[in-house]
Image (cartoon, rainbow, N blue to C red):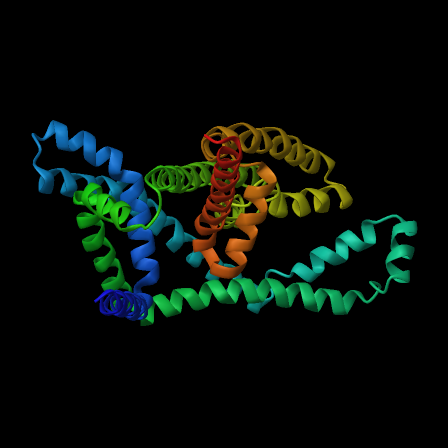
Amino acid sequence: MDGNKSLHQTSFYLLLLAVSVALCFILAPFFNTIFWGSILALIFQPVQRRLLVRFGRRRNLAAFTTLLLCIVIVILPLTLVAGTLVQQGTLVYDQMKSGDLNFGNYFDHVLHALPLSAQHILDQIGLNDISDLQQKLTAGAAQISQFLAGQALSIGQNTLQFLISFGVMLYLLFFLVRDGREISRLIREAIPLDENHKQHLLRKFATVVRATVKGNVAVALVQGGLGGIAFWVIGIQGALLWGVMMAFLSLLPAIGAALIWGPVAIYFLLTGALAKGLGLIAFCAIVIGTVDNVLRPILVGKDTKMPDWVVLISTLGGMALLGINGFVIGPLVAALFMSCWDLFTRDKHDASTGK
């Protein structure tokens, strides 16, 4: 009898694993849709709870209102920014094709503005072939702009698929917001872990996701906006495009926005525009740097309780493997890794002390 019971239980577990894997394969084409729908539902769950009390426990009305707020606060602004980025990228690509914009010439100006000793060092390490470097720089910039232009064409050609995914995300978001507490309870009950471990890990999961998305996005928007304004003030073409690029790169702690404004400031300094170069360095290093050093620890590090270097490396690794999704998944995996080992060492210590 015990043998049959064990066999039945093993068979059931195998069946459970098989149907779970099969469902993952079926839902794989909508991974991004499900992922971001779940993230937004988790972030807006506190809003849903407040509206639920205000609307007299009417769940559908509270969930629908929360969905509208999510669209107005998050989805519409991101859609406008993405559309502007693609439009500006297409414009830059067209200017490069027509020859109106040549990054190779900018590098040529910088190279000739260097001291003779620096030029001699470049000659010794094989960077004296200006035409080859110009071609590489121009080709690299063209690839980036061509990618953005290609994305615009791809979105236009796959409008139906985009609309379907967008509609599925909104539909899913409504139910995740409305039934989030029940879904969370079912997941918590199904996880085969000690109750204290489950509560600790699920709290860490929710905290890291909220802090990473809200904190990093807030910091990125502030840094990108300030950087774009600085570029516009000193008269750089495509200030909006560079501001959006700085916002995107600001997802990388400490080094993000500097990858854009740093080379521009160096170019101004080497070509004799000292006022613009020094002004840009002062503004970006002090103002944008302060935003990163002050806001990010408050919005991200304080809640996640992870060192900045862990956040940086996990974000870079996550984005290298998973693209834009990685800036959430990378720090999340790192936080859960640290939490699991913390629980393990705590349990081992309790066992050794007889607690």
